Image (tube, rainbow, N blue to C red; front, top):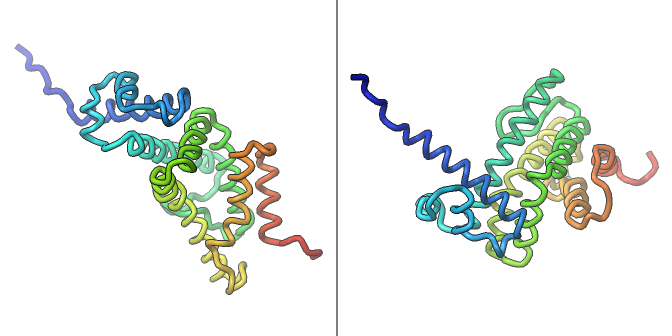
Length: 214
């Protein structure tokens, strides 16, 4: 008699984890952060709520980790898109460095625009961002785990540009990146105007070259 193979617990756990991520992101987009519950996530994912509590201590932890996972997927898609056009891939956890700072920043910000306009990303991101304004703890976690790691990649790229002589030595990279990142975030959050590749290209040009006549 043929022996049945043992269940693959790792595969089952990964399947459950993925279902929980999808359920959490879908729920927060549909009903908002305050009405999203561990019980609701569990029911939608088809798992017991104890399964969720075994891995996470709160719904905020679930959603933040789901977003980190979504970001990783977006990075993989961006890398594939870059490879398709023959663009050299940056090292892991780094912005592209082709030697052309403006081109590299425009490339990354265009990918950011595509991500912000992606429906599966936009609705839950808005819900989390709004809750982060109302709830200090959520806001702190949101910035520390989702925003700041990405901003530090800009800091590293701008420092490399300083070393190459493309940015003035006295410039603070952490402040400088806000010249193009902050306007994009504000326009997106407030829906005060369209966000397009042309818009972010212009932000980079203004940030790098200023407003004075050249």
